[in-house]
Image (tube, rainbow, N blue to C red):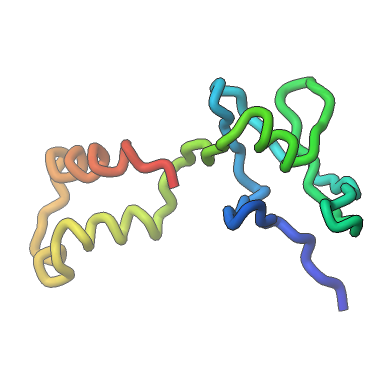
Length: 119
């Protein structure tokens, strides 16, 4: 049995989704290289940390990126179909939704509400 590679990592109570691009306080974008680096912890033990890289720079462990350039925020991504459906349902109840005619105006209102999302 094979296990799926780890794609999340926790630092100071914050869980990082390594499949996402992260933006530092200067606006630079950091991506996970897919690699891990052993780092000696304060208690003397060693733990693997994800390697992050911006553009063509040398990869750095996430804890160093976070302490030097953080805090980090996830880069905005397009809304998924499920998120679009939940936004439409939240704007109008399921019963009202069945009665709505899909017009360019109602679609524009929904898109406007989704534009500010970054999660």
